[in-house]
Figure 1 (cartoon, helix red, strand yellow):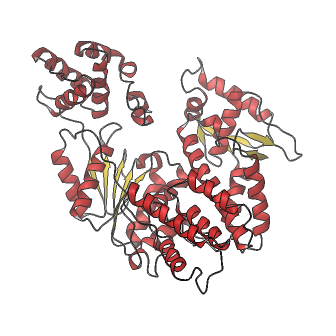
Figure 2: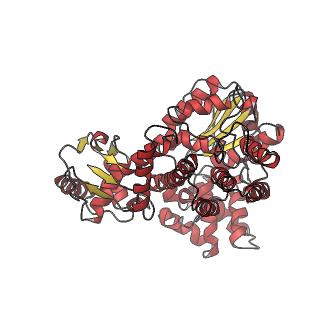
Figure 3: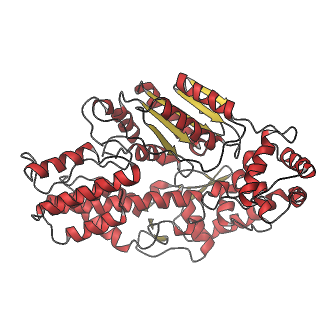
Length: 524
């Protein structure tokens, strides 16, 4: 069965007939099974995806009904029942996203380059809207849509590179200018634009394109373009074309902002340039009741190669990670501290997230984990891996590989369970002490309450009520912050009374973080 997910899902059988399910829920179910093809989709996961807000009275029976109707319209054997879930056989599916990825990795000089270019052209021509729109409110679906949107950019770059290699420059400058405007911080479109401008005799404009990009990186991120692009700029300044270069050929590396050059000098990143320091988030709120713990974590991270901060959702692991990261960077300014956010990663993309944070691009035929390890080499780098619990297996495999092959790479991770890798030091992040009205949990509530209710000064009775609130919330920082935010519309006594229905009450969190939007989201 041929399946298209780059835009609204569409299924076509071997005879070319459209067999896309008519029902919205069945299309959503098919999209979920295709997204996780080859892996079992548990019943609970499928139910949550089909009915994210209000499930039917008997969700398991309703799911079985939709699976039955879906199977009836698809090829036999495509969807099988496995244990407490369902699995789609990846060997029976020809996916447009997979074909696009394969065509994009084909080199411009490969024998099948022309055929690959035709595949890319055809797929991009019919790609309208985001990928997996049926799963726009599912974390895995959103993460995959983001990954595939990046694939679309790389596919456009691959087409342009092949046209440049053939000496076809008509319309390239306009197309590349549009791509640079759409991806202002991405280096490859700038390198290609410089090559296209040079190939059309516009060397001054090529130099200007580099200068604009260099200023953008400097103003927004405080870094410089990759050594490869800087070298190409130097060649343009002196002679316009390197003696051994093909006119119009782009540079080979793709270094994202804050990353390393894709092809450093022999011997790994340390022989060339180590990763630039991608800016760590600067939390806008104070860290309450964690001074001793931050000092302990920083000391552990300085003494051991792998340290994992373990604790339940909402206990403040990420906030602690950022603070420790800043202290590690301050203690050793020459060592890059690189943040890798894994909350939206799915199992095949852990290495992609880390490579993107480091500015390392993929190479055909080379496993990405191996490429990351090779390019880091002897470089001194501290990796901060946040939210490993979503992908704990692949994250552990990557950490194991890096610490065993890169002697100066250290890892500080957060997870709801330990990674279980060799040499791992586990630091359990506790909830805040509750105690009396001077306890850290009470201090946190008051501090966050003042953000939504300026001038908030609780009297003795209110402080006693706050102490009871934080006790009932077990000192969990996220729950306390969500409760304090309710003082925008409630008083302290009303918040205390509302804790009998805490999942309803604690639902006005951060708009910009789905995991911290509510207590229910954190539990999910």
